[in-house]
Image (cartoon, rainbow, N blue to C red):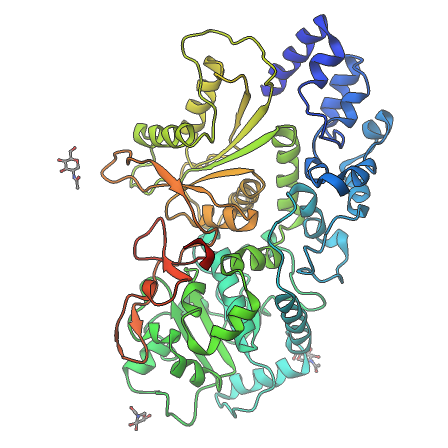
Amino acid sequence: MDMKRFRTQVYSSKLTDPANAIVSRVPERKIGFNMMKLMGILAAGLMVSSVFFTASVIYRDLASDRVRGFAEARVFEVKTEEVANSGLEDIISHAVEAPKDKLLGGLLADEFDEGSCLSRFQSVLFRKAAPHKPSSYLVSRLRRYESLHRRCGAYTESYNRTLEQLKSGQSTGTTDCNYVVWISFSGLGNRILTLASAFLYALLTNRVLLVDRGTDMTDLFCEPFPGASWLLPLEFPLNQFSSFNQEHPHCYGNMLKNNVINSSTGSVPPFLYLHLVHDYNDHDKLFFCDQDQSLFQKVPWLIMKTDNYFVPSLFLVPSFEQELSNLFPNKETVFHHLGRYLFHPSNAVWGLITRYYQAYLSKADERVGIQIRVFDTDTGPFQHVLDQILSCSLREKVLPEVDVQKPIIRPSGNQRSIAILMTSLSSGYFEKVRNMYWEHPTVTGEVVSVYQPSHEEYQQAEKQMHNRKAWAEMYLLSLTDVLVTSSWSTFGYVAQGLGGLKPWILYKPENRTAPDPPCHRAMSMEPCFHAPPFYDCKAKSGVDTGALVPHVRHCEDMSWGLKLFDLDQF
Ligand SMILES: *[C@@H]1O[C@H](CO)[C@@H](O)[C@H](O)[C@H]1NC(C)=O
Ligand SMILES: *[C@@H]1O[C@H](CO)[C@@H](O)[C@H](O)[C@H]1NC(C)=O
Ligand SMILES: *[C@@H]1O[C@H](CO)[C@@H](O)[C@H](O)[C@H]1NC(C)=O
């Protein structure tokens, strides 16, 4: 439909001033070329000058690297015929050869076969150069982790030996490899956040992270570590993960409660189950105390189930403090870096992402992401949510105002195009916003297009295509320039973290009323830990853990949550 509209525009402008009318839509700084065959055919059919092809935008980001950008971008100036004849694969493989920082400042290991996971090295082509570089210490720790993972990964000699302890039920306390097993649990947004948390915990404790594949982990993500899988073997002896709960005899909190174990216990079991789900009790929460951490050092297998981004509370564990500050001098980049390191969309999901991006987003001058998640028993759409989205976006100048008086605004010099990407379980908000920009011109002349990839009406936790699309949508949101997100939504947290974006957060509506003010700007791009402990391990009493250090504070969108912030903003 939008294509049809565009075609009409192109066609009618051709009648007056063919080349200019089209080319002027695209700022000159944008260099690259158009990959869309359809566009190619369309434009060729209209016999538009070949300038059109080189002026299009997919590699906008390369060009925005100002000085360096121009030279690099020349790589992409190919002849019209080449574009028409070459597939996406060819184009991207050319592009990958461009000297862009495809290893993300050393974050990614340079040992992968690129074809097995296209997103790993192509993502850089779709993103703006990230202002946040990983610390050289983080980079060196990741390389060290990778070699540990290789040495201790599934089916290695060390793994087999440690597994023997598990089978015998005896821990000798002298294993050379220790593990944390992450249980696939909860919705996709939560899983991405918990897996990053578990990985950081593994890094801090020199453990090897092994991932329960659940129903779709292999379908959604590439392997992040070179040379050794992160997947837990299917024949792992404790693979009935649904039986792990707070009453499990190996649940650490449960064992503490029943006095089966304590920090002075000499002999420890070969495995413990750590229940870090939002409903965890005071015993389970002792996970965040140094004393308990030192007991875990003797336990080769830790099985972890969580639905929360628990990283902020790791920053309050004294024995982790120094290492964390070395790893992350900029505290609010923890998920940003770990997320980009760990989560590479599988080729199936990458196809969804790149096709959508090229079809709807690549040509815009600016991309705005609006992520809507309504926590209500009813599915909506709700008028108060729409009101809130619009009042936030217009007030904060995320979106241009429309003129409801004039039927048309003469094209001015401003022909900037804005593409709005909306994600929601319902299509109602998208339709209203799209209609607004269809029925009325913008006051300042921008051309606004509105897109929503999917609307599934209700959240389906485990369906394959559903989760592929959900992951693609999170990723697409992370490729936008400005982001508006809903409070409490892990989906939004993933998008903002991967994108390195500080979103406008829509306050949570109470009593089905749009809050005033409708939103405010996040001060940190980190996710929020929704269920943190409020316990002082030394004093053995309650404490406000959001007030102990400047970089761990309460979240903007949840008053009792904890989140990492950078010091210099206060
Ligand atoms: C570890 O055990 C598996 C299965 O029992 C076996 O196939 C593999 O060869 C063993 N690894 C080593 C290094 O012995
Ligand atoms: C630790 O547990 C043992 C039993 O496993 C018990 O005898 C001992 O008193 C406990 N110590 C503390 C400090 O609670
Ligand atoms: C919610 O709205 C209803 C009706 O508009 C009102 O009677 C009630 O007091 C409101 N509750 C709160 C907590 O604001």
